[in-house]
Image (cartoon, rainbow, N blue to C red; front, side, top):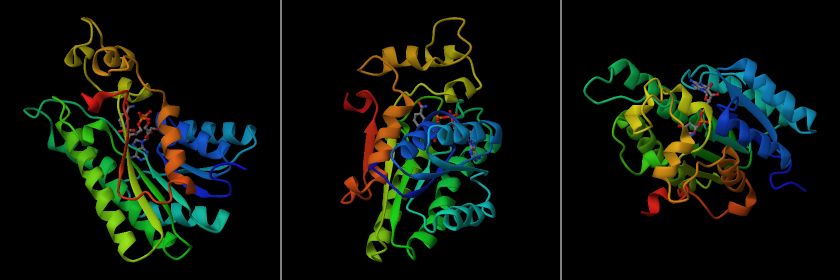
Length: 264
Ligand SMILES: NC(=O)c1ccc[n+]([C@@H]2O[C@H](COP(=O)([O-])OP(=O)(O)OC[C@H]3O[C@@H](n4cnc5c(N)ncnc54)[C@H](O)[C@@H]3O)[C@@H](O)[C@H]2O)c1
């Protein structure tokens, strides 16, 4: 019997990195997983791999910042699997740059995906879950939701917003006895493609001269007390626990998985 046997769970941003690992680990532990992402090709591949290994999964293309799409995504999970037990609000982008020249357009785009996407997902998941027996919602925040980083002001603002939105949503769900738990996860430096998508030279983050992409393993040697980057599965294991009934007394709280970064 898997740890989330029979549960119906949506994972956003499930085509890559942490989201793909969450989808795989949840499916391995018996969940039916609806993977969504803007990247259909890679999302379909993750789902095909899950099915090949005997799991249950489906893919839907979704931009989490588009409100119209959310009820369709939730309805798809419910029509396939009768209910919605979990939502992993994972999709996100990391845009870096100095406060002095960061564009308002980029600020708004990052907020739309990293914060508004999380609000919208929670809104439509709660609407359904409260009438179908409850569930668990997990937000992918970051250590950047606790502490500031130079050149990441917009990202820190977004992840900090997610951290407090989580607590407010948890309080509302508790007040009305909807049996819905809401918690946030805070990864440190995790080895995923997100680092290669940050459009700036590695030198900006004290990488070796000449580096033009950020290398999470090099960053972690200096930045994390465990001196290595985490793996996407390290985060997926925490998400698995929060989606499972083993965490049934946890709501409104934070799970930090960061190789010790915040302990210093
Ligand atoms: N990797 C890290 O070190 C790290 C650390 C802390 C927090 N996080 C957070 O973890 C989450 C996953 O990041 P990752 O490292 O796996 O990155 P990733 O780039 O590997 O994966 C992110 C996924 O989100 C998708 N996505 C982007 N915009 C989207 C949109 N508008 N709608 C739907 N999907 C969209 C991308 O296509 C991609 O598949 C993000 O919220 C990120 O901020 C990552």
